[in-house]
Amino acid sequence: MNTFLHGRIATLLVFLITVLGLAAGVWRYAYLQGLEQLHARGVADLSLASDRLVGQLQRYRDLTVFLADHPAVHDVLAADTPSSARDFLQDIADKSAALDVLIVDVQGRVLASPQSAPGAVLIDQPFVKRALRGALGWGHGQSAPLTDRAYFHAAPVFGDAGQIKGAVIVSTDLNGIDYAWRGSNPAAFFTDSAGVVQIANRSELLFWQRPMGQPGLIPPDQSAVNFSASFVQGNEIWKMGWGPYIPDEALHLTKLLPVIGLTGEVLLDIAPARRLALSQASAVAALCLAFGAMLFLATERRRALSQANTKLERQVAKRTAALNASNTELRREAAEREEAQAALRRAQADLVQAGKLSALGQMSAGISHELNQPLMAIRSFAENAVQFMARDKPERAAENLSRISEMSDRMARIIQNLRAFARQESVPQKRVDVVRVVASAIELTQTYLDDAGVTLAYDPPETPVWVHGGEVRLGQVFVNLITNACDAMSGRETRRLTVQIMTDDGIEVCFQDTGPGIEMPDKVFDPFYTTKSVGGSSGMGLGLSISYGIVQSFGGQIRGSNLETARPDAPSPDANPLDGGGAMFSVQLERADEIEVAA
Image 1 (tube, rainbow, N blue to C red):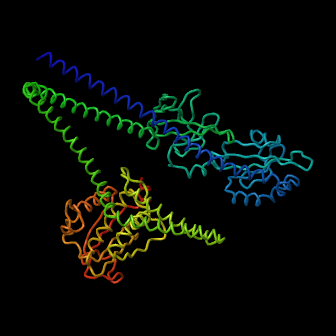
Image 2: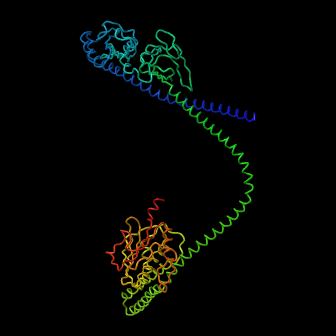
Image 3: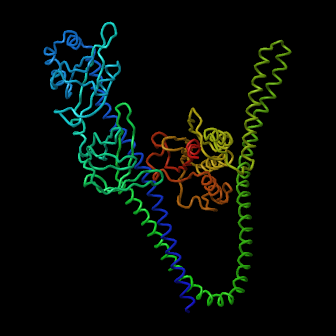
């Protein structure tokens, strides 16, 4: 018992250590992914802030270049009368929001300015020296007594001979530039070449300076502040305690801006990345613990089931022999049932073929008449053609030969329909023209209709109507319905059969007679059900049952009803006058094109 308990405790400890390691790995991976995303966002934010600052300063550089070619500036340098240009320079400063606009001569002496005193010498400023050498100068520093943070642009003024006459200097107050940025996220600042913060959206960082060769910043009074730096997968992380508006732990990114001589820097808070990594690690740990708990419960249940299974195996062993015997008996019965089903299918196929042959037997006399009549006509036309040829009347002989060809085509069509009707079809075609099938069935039963004195009313559609079915078996259904209608109208005063193909909502072929109707419509498709009297037309009552199965195999439906109970859209008795009601059989079929599109 103690050994079992110790094993379970050891397993639990191993599981907990594994979960802890997995959670730590997930935290590390999620934290690094969060830093990568934060890095990408910081690069975009820093680029946006840098572009905005460069754009604001470049406006004043363009203003400086523009003023260097202005006639008023040349007048000041030529006449040495700066007092007249003071109002002009003040107007320029007011309209451009510049801090000051100065005109200096080649000695760097201020000739005119709305803010600075004339006579001041600026030759020691690097940007002034550069401008007096013929290049654009720029720099930053104090502009006493106006501001402690200013940015300067200087442009040389050239004479007609290309000599340098002086320079124009435009100063910008940096306090006005970063004032609009205060409080925006993230914390961003710009340092000069000495590492001093000149521009920042956090005012508490202004004039902080980077220690020589070290990361971080220190206040202007050189007092100690909380700071440490580390690198995580190439990302520089600063830990600080510089105030409520600066993150305690942040990702530090930099971007050089040589066009203005500054370096852009940004601090992005990494606390959200840590929290997200912690939440993902906690979720993984919770899932693992839940899975472990379920696994423990499943193990306990399995152990209990194993004990119960041992007891059940004894009982199962006792019944195995009896089950084997029963299984053998079931397999034997299943084999016998499959053989019986196969025999039933063969019998059904033979019954369908027998039904077709029976119909052919009933129509044999009429078909013989249909074939004998063209044969007699062919013989007569042939003898006449010989006599016309003997009388040298080839045109009359050709006419008789044309009639012989027409009779031959008629006989060939009758024989072709007989062959198609008599053959045994096993697989339905994918597309069948129901107009053609109805025409073939009418042609096969035409003699039967004539002998029964039945008037046929049929107006076929002008275009093919394609349905899903088999041409031979569908023709058998139509032949069966036509012959049944003829038999039903035997002895009636009005014998009229109306055939219609309707394509409104679906494909429906209707056969309507003027017989006595159906005595029991709900049983008309039952096997061996027949309304033919003994001694009349022979029938076993299987024709409609076979037709029902054929139409069902095509995915369609066949219905039989009396005219009084027919559906509202059935052919109107007013359009086809009837004598004492009648029956109507409708065959509904599926459109072939819809099935193919669905497939």
